[in-house]
Amino acid sequence: MTTHLDTRLDLLRETNLFPPGLIDRFGKWIATAPEEKLYRINVLRWAKDVGADENLVIDLFLHATQAGIVDMVWSLLCTQCGILVNSQGGLRAMSRGKRHCRL
Image (cartoon, rainbow, N blue to C red; front, side, top):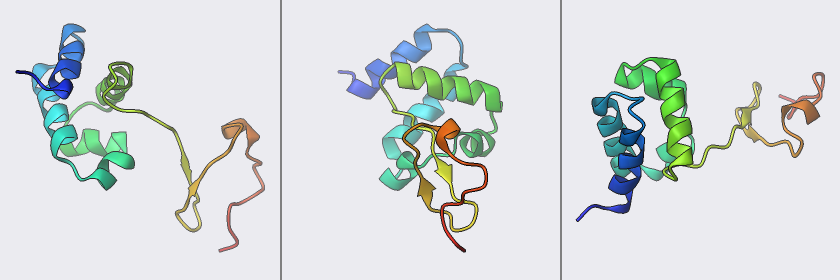
């Protein structure tokens, strides 16, 4: 019997866009990674860690979002303190001269 994750990974396999080994590594990582790693994944770092092309991994994560495996929310980290900065209007709503903190 396949799990919900396996069913979703099969959707990625059906696209024929990704090497099967990459999908297998992605699925194993999703199933075993600690929650905090899943919550704040750096897609480019993950690509480097698994030795995969960055553009391919970005596509993989975007397709995984469409397949219902992950939800992706783009956020900014304050360059001064490292706190996650959210903006209701997205990047355009953020002022160039205004910083999140006073560090």
